[in-house]
Length: 242
Ligand code: UDP
Image 1: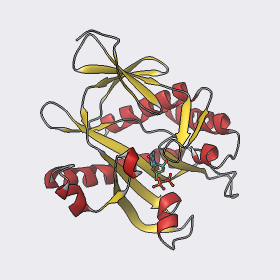
Image 2: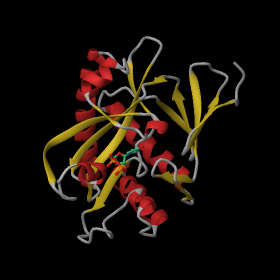
Image 3: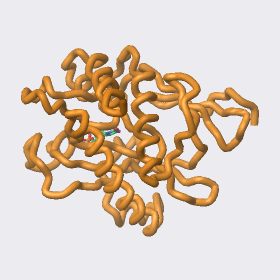
């Protein structure tokens, strides 16, 4: 396969081929979307920030024996990744009630959950990513029972590691979304990205429900200072590392 061919363009990233068929190059865009792409905008510098945060997190997870698609970053907004077949499932882990959990239940935003909640959504824009039950997921053959069990175990382990990381940065990990892929040997591999686009992150030094937001909710809810918040997450992670 020839290199530098665009094979996929998503809302926040573009995937290119490389001279190695097993490796893809991901370019992180500054484009931001919300509400199933009904709201569109640009967050200046987001591509570089999210690529750098994601790389840091993938490296940390690898150090904790979690297989990820991350290889390296040839530039601050470009990540080389192992080619995997992405499962059409959004895996969401929640520690504190927010977003759709509050809209779909009577839980109030900010309620600390008694245990981390692992949820699955069908990655399908035309259906607006509906919540799946485990049985629906198996019925649709989106994953096997073994893969589903492995996904749940990995999701909880990733949650423990990320909670700890963000806590050290005085940031509360409210919830996050991850995606998994399968390699040629059908091994489950963490893919996509983990960044303020895909996590809810609250600044522990702020009590105001708007001021504490350090993630894409600033864009979704027009809270302003989106770039500053993303930059702040990166700076705190790098300071913690240093
Ligand atoms: N999320 C995401 N992509 C999606 C849907 C959700 O990255 O397509 C993230 C979102 O940023 C949040 C978590 O998953 O950190 C839970 O999102 P929720 O189900 O509450 O959806 P929302 O309120 O954003 O519609």
